[in-house]
Length: 74
Image (cartoon, rainbow, N blue to C red; front, side):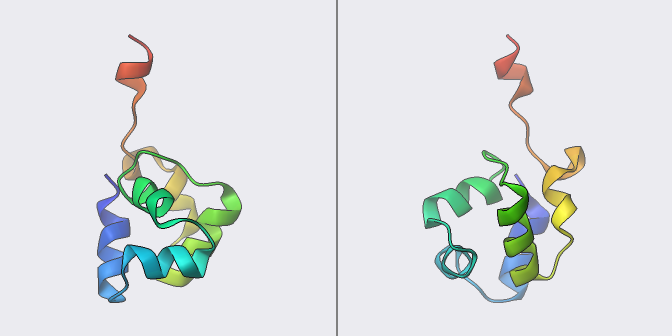
């Protein structure tokens, strides 16, 4: 889970839907990004980061992402 992302969104008092609308993605997809189930494209990461005023590279930082490697490599 990307706790830093949820925290940034809540600090801005935005819903999943509002961030998704502003970023031009579906709410479900944004939820997956925030939960660490999906990694956004660079463009989408930059849009979300701009909305929430965070560094866009955090989306690609191992420490900032929940990975599914254990289940994928089994």
